[in-house]
Length: 357
Image 1: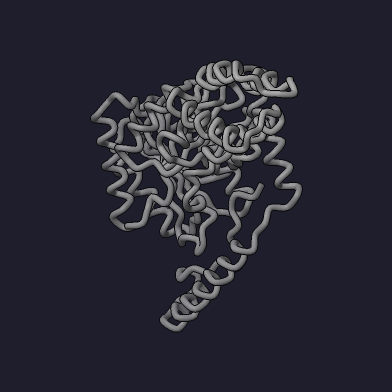
Image 2: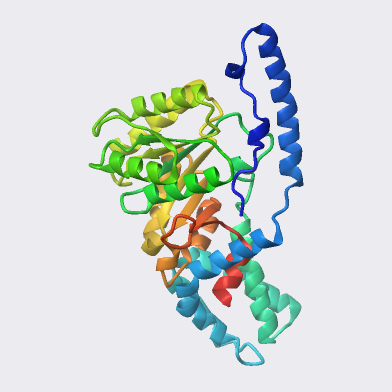
């Protein structure tokens, strides 16, 4: 699946030419480019191969969940008719899969209401209603498309990535950089995680592997200064996308959350509409703890999207439903493995179908 669809070969920047006449020509070219890009994005439809790729990655990511708790759901629908005594078991499975009590109640209330209204007992139809309600939960917070898929494309796309230590944040940034670069974007990374020892060096290593530039200061430096220098380098270096890594803040440490707010303010000084996305990386294996993290980060910096890392490492997988229902935040990406290309755009239908088997 293509992550980035900007026409790089047609991109023109003022610094490419000299003089007032050239600047006017560049402005006209950029206006024409914006129109062309908007038309290109509006007309874009994933190819069958791209759709199949996302489906395959999603299947792989939820394999353990499908063979675990969600596999038990499939067993409930083996009878011709869905017996009333199975509702309690279905509830237990959803709660145990990290869907959460509130979200589970909302799902089952909707399903039971439709089953009653339709007067159906056939297991196949009850299963289909459950599938539809699970998809509806995930699609409810969809809202605007991701910033990288909107029209017109921002001149400089700025992404802020947050999350606690160990969630897979830096690895996710590397995977995102790889995907954007593969699709032709000029990516610049900002190593603003100066709090954790070796974090800067870790991002540099990933940058070298992917082939993208990393702006970094020494460990312990002011993260705000790193962000300022990163944005300055991006503006002068023809960058398309800036991805800013931040310290793995423990959501219980108020001073560190305040530092995140400071970074957000620095970004907005010269780019009032940025960050265009604030992505929270959650370790899918942490279950309901991830929901608590999401609430805290949203209050601090206004999270706009979730990346579910390590989804292939959990046998539960229900946290996606809880996040969508309780917080109204869309899942943007899912981590599907350990390889560089193991990051997939989140598709609600693929996700639910893969879980239910």
